[in-house]
Amino acid sequence: MTTILDLAHDLEAAGLERENAEKIAISISALQQSDVATKADLALLKTDLAVLETRLTTRGIIGLSATATILFAALHLWPTHP
Image (cartoon, rainbow, N blue to C red; front, side, top):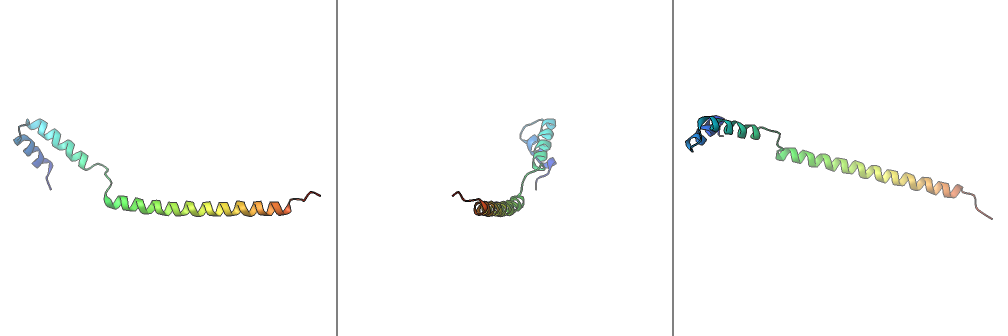
């Protein structure tokens, strides 16, 4: 793995002034260490989304069933017109 110092030396060898080479190397290093999602992070997110989808689907089915039951009971209790 290339270190910040190695990168700065390579940039300096390519013709950049030492100060600029160091600043660029530090900036690149900071970008590499920032919050970037890994494949493992994405796999965990995919699993979490699948669980959430299952929960929401289950709640939707339960809600729909409850609504249908209440409607069915209300229609049976509704007085008939002569």
